[in-house]
Image (cartoon, rainbow, N blue to C red; front, side):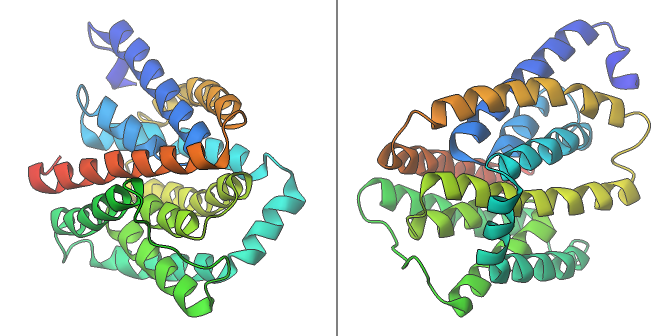
Length: 257
């Protein structure tokens, strides 16, 4: 594992562990944003490609825990309830992935990042977009299509999902579970895609495996915090993370990193 053979390997490993714990905590509290935290943190010291590889397996495992935290029956119930969103998201993710060589990633990051910041900032100021608890299959499919489209191109489909669930005022336990299911599907597809792309290989898989325990430790801490906060605070924290995540997407779109 070449990444850990340099003179600063001990510092890098401790730093990576701390970033994984932090990402797990954020995900445990609001249900998403671990990839954003991990790839942003690790990319300050290692290449974005290795940082991407490092987050893939911790993301897969943490989403599995999040989705199944309330049991298999509850997870299956969430899959059925949001089946239209999931099907539309997966379909458009697979399709839009073919556009990666054609459409600049920077443009896609800006297109999604700017609306996320605007929506979340207005919601935090007391002017949220409100959707009914059952918005209808067309709206749900439309949001799923948007999330999947951007997921296929940029690897980002958390913000549209969180926006939909927040706008529907989804109860926090169900929102956490649904996000785990939705992002879990995306994580499985991501693993498959990068086994073929070569990002996950004999050199990067061990590093990714090493980050699973600290990520799960952070997730456990985050779950403990999330269990103690009420719905209103959960919503505010979700919106705050969306603002930060949206600004990070804009940064990446403008700076190309």
